[in-house]
Length: 211
Image (cartoon, rainbow, N blue to C red; front, side, top):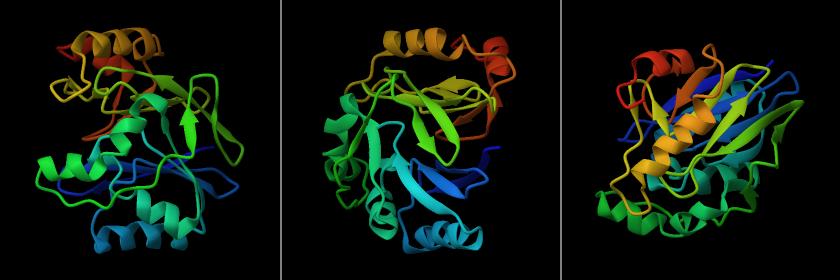
């Protein structure tokens, strides 16, 4: 059974997710922890629950989702993973952050490049990386079929969708990703987005005005 813990980090309220199973091996998704206090909150939860981080995964390369990459990869000596199409975004984290009035340390280059035919593994669990371009060229969602949830990054939100007015954004591609990769999932699948509250595929299929 996969367990999930949500943290809201940095001024943009990024959802950082910890996922773990009975082995206590842990996945860190979109580490957005920017301040020392946020880093300590993450570290304390991991220590208090005897978790063993094995991988940091970025659903995409926007700066607010990678602010904690350097911290978690250094602290836990773990690799990081991102889709190859967002590798260039990752290398420009400091420049991205400066455009929005943030300061950011440059994270390390990802050591694992995500593809749809390569599962994301921790403990006894496996997640499917669904390539969902549109918000960024290399956006991905992480789907756990047996557990019945998907981490949607900034592709799909409760009642909304990801913005496409930043460099690399493509509205038509985003809608195609949502319809072909997410709206094909069962209604009961829980959706954990990159910002805001969780929802379900069925709820968004019925009530999301963009869908």
